[in-house]
Length: 156
View 1 (tube, helix red, strand yellow):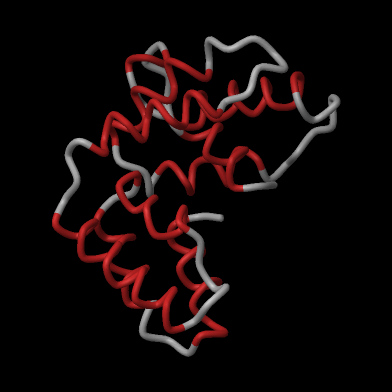
View 2 (cartoon, rainbow, N blue to C red):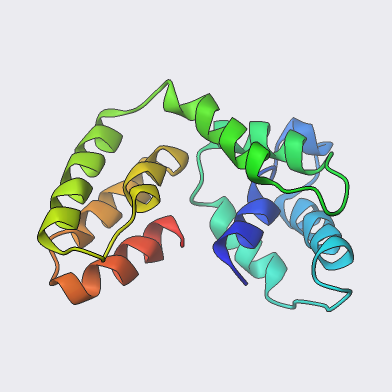
């Protein structure tokens, strides 16, 4: 399952925008929507566990914005605007760890061309600080290991 699908499935977990459902209940609902709308009816047994795992990584304020947007979308409508809305919500409150990560990430991009993208360096604002700290530690690894390590903490 791609990162965006897992991200879609996780962002309203435990939030009032999702009707006060549990994390598992919300993941089940969003995964059912994914199945109905995008996956051609194919059941993805990894969706709910992946959703719960990702939910533990993303900032709560991201949950609120993205969830209310995504769960209201009709099938076939891109979630890009929802992801952008979530990003805009937290980008105004960039933390020191985000600034540090972005600077270090850009340095790694320069030292190891082709390993990281702009998105890799900018998406830290969506995640809890502990995951950003772990991703930042990845930037000192050998070039061949950086991308997999960073995306292991901050998604694809």
